[in-house]
Image 1: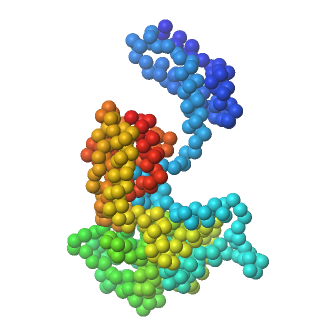
Image 2: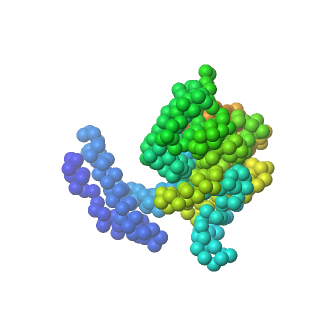
Image 3: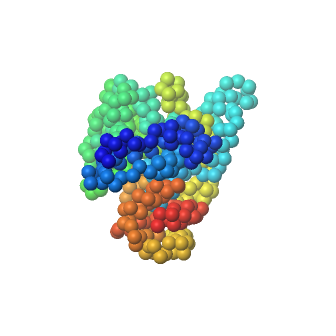
Length: 467
């Protein structure tokens, strides 16, 4: 039989749809998914035939049962959501590709409450009139940060865009060359400034900027002074930058607002927990900075959001900017953020209950104990199929935060006997609940810092199935 004859013998879609195996799934899988799955399964066979070497054509058999079975598998894939849960075994806590920070229990409950019921999103219950969505979270942000006013938009890039658009459109924004950062996803500060209508006024050099550089740059066209925290990289060696307090003083003397983009943002001084110092929002406000922006879903450990705090007169202008409506947050973000912020009223409560903070400050002895627990489970279930052991490694904060901080951690390493580590890593990604791991020294590494105890069974079951 030649290639053309094989192609002609491929069963039609209706033939496969009428098979008993397909009929069994019609009761619980939408028909449109089934038809698409059958077509895809038939297309697989067609591609196989087209790619057959000449010597393999005569022995090739079209297996109708295989086509049906493969179609059933495809229907299961169509039924699952593209956005799904994964197990983060990489050790990168704020993993941008894996959804950044995990919400705390209180935030999840708050989201569920407003998601399944009506809410007072823009309704003032006391007055019985239309209200503001910002009123639900502004007071608590002010309490935590010490700012006069606050508002929230959908992410920090939007927050920066709104501040510049409101305060500096058509005017110059003075910024150090060493702070013209790329903030992720190829979004760069100069490009955000251009989009806002602000005019970039660079001062200083990449590694050194002095007070005099800012003072000389101030003129009639100056709209504001911008300070950008380089949260995702560090310049080391022969460097100098201007303290935020000095910038605030220059702004006050010249009646020019000073705006600081902290980026990942934090309410906690992590140096108290043995980590590198990162500026807090409270310190920025206390130093006299007029406007500060930061993310809600990075070091803060809440939902994706861009938070703006500072002088009331300036924040009020931003609330009236037409752009605000296009970048406003929804009810679920507000609910999750409010619940997360309430935990910050007591720092120890925040550390214990916000997953991101808890993972960052996790005790090394606890990590070792958890690694041993996972090791025991895996040795019992797949000990004859892989070499398994405990390794001392390093985790990362991630999310463009604390770029030089390496957190000592423990992990479980796996070297399979019958497949390569690369193949095992691939198969784990295709598990029912994908396991995202990393390869280190030709072994799969599972960093327990970012794995919750209730995910150990998922990892074990995936490895059992794969190996």
